[in-house]
Amino acid sequence: MANTVNINDLDTLSPSAVDDNYYGILFTADGDTNKVVFEDAVSQANANNGCLCLKKVSFEIAAADVLNLNATPQYFLPPLGADTYPDFVNISVQFKNGTTPYATNVDLEVRYFGSNQPVYENATILNATNDCIRSLTPSDPTFAGANLQVVANTGVYIWSPTGAPTAGDFDLVVHATYVEVNIA
Image 1 (cartoon, rainbow, N blue to C red):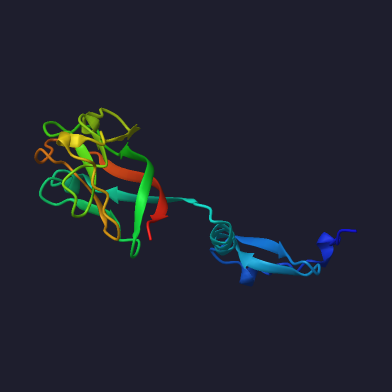
Image 2 (cartoon, rainbow, N blue to C red; image 1 turned 45 degrees about the vertical axis):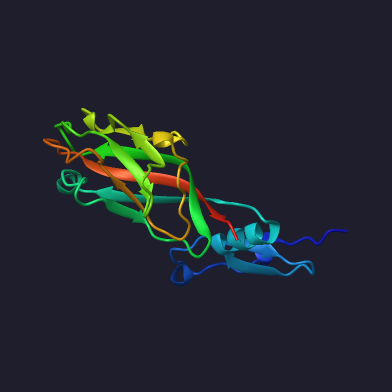
């Protein structure tokens, strides 16, 4: 017969014990319950089962920095560790708080530091005329006749490869969803 637990028997969190973590309840084989940080439980379960879990990073680029994206790329994902790289599922750009679209050099690319080829790109993404979200697309894996270069244990950046955008005033929020892949 399965162990049953009355919800009234579970420990409750007093208001002073509530923090920024989300908690899950873990039931042990002998019927005990433990409170664990949800992300820790998911991470451990994935490690135990060899699963890959999706991760997300979001960061904002102020309009003044967008106007300088050719000379000063924006790094948004640090190295993930030895023999590990992010395999991107989606990268999108949110335009906000602007009234004037960017003109000239309205393309963006995402690259691994040390690679001379984009992993995601969009040739006309910065010409948005209102608050919206646009997606970058995966690059052709045979870009310029060479294989796409994925570099492990290196950061990732976004930039405007053809020159500095002009005239625009939208702040950008870049959202990237990825899976950590270990190649060891």
